[in-house]
Length: 49
Image 1 (cartoon, rainbow, N blue to C red):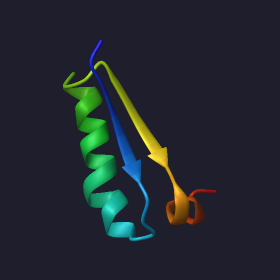
Image 2 (cartoon, rainbow, N blue to C red):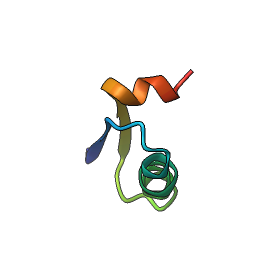
Image 3 (cartoon, helix red, strand yellow):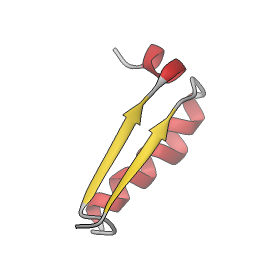
Image 4 (cartoon, one colour):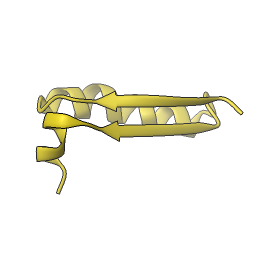
């Protein structure tokens, strides 16, 4: 099984909207990986809630 872990560590909103979310959604949609995990770490946790 192929899997990818994407580590999100910044509070920069452009990073999540233009990089992390776009890549992770397309990775699932197009079957690039069997499993896609987004890990929220450090400062990025302030934006989740």
